[in-house]
Length: 324
Image (cartoon, rainbow, N blue to C red; front, side, top):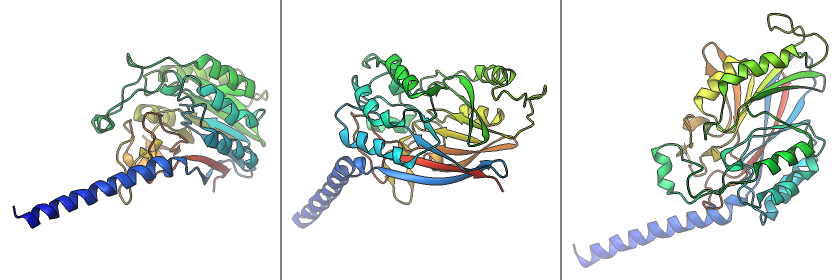
């Protein structure tokens, strides 16, 4: 190769390296803290029902020093949501609950439901980022620290939020009956789909709205909206939720891919959901039934991988309205 040819290659490699370094710096220093509120409308309520505003938050991965994130989440209380749904991975550090408390205290008294993510159980560990291309990551290995999930649950109880980990619950909001069911972290394999049917049956047998609206065959006299909640949107979970009558499913975990290529989208999802549904509102079909699926890109990253690109951190305000 001539000297001119070698210098041209060197210049090209230098340029590529500079672009890569610039992209990393932007993702780590700018986009990672470019908090975004995504707003969508979901037509799932019965005819004539008043709209219900649902704030969906996920994947805070909170560390105590992340004050800007805490203040931004606090500011969301000004939206005056009717319901908060938290889809897990709240903790990102052994003292993460300090930041979670500061972020979520303004929502005390606002109805809410939550499920666990793997990083509510285990702290983050260093991973090879290219390993995600081989399949979903492993969590809770020998290097992972245990987090205080019991204290997290106690705080959520103070807020008045309902634990949906492998459980079902019901509430009435703005004149509409809402039925919820959820699973514990599917990424760690803590989901117990076999318990959902029993949980729903026991909920309905208990006449949750005190009006004998459930008939013996499981059909209701008054319209009810059924919502499924999971941290990780694995296909097995989504299919089961649709089979159990979910009209809306809320999930997180994917970080929207965390690093996206403009025009291509997410490179990985860290589960088996299609890349095209790693972020935002879409439809999930199973058998003859379909549900709306909202996957949050989340508000944080693991402190061991503090980069986002073409995928800003987000919360979602879903306005549930009457179906046509």
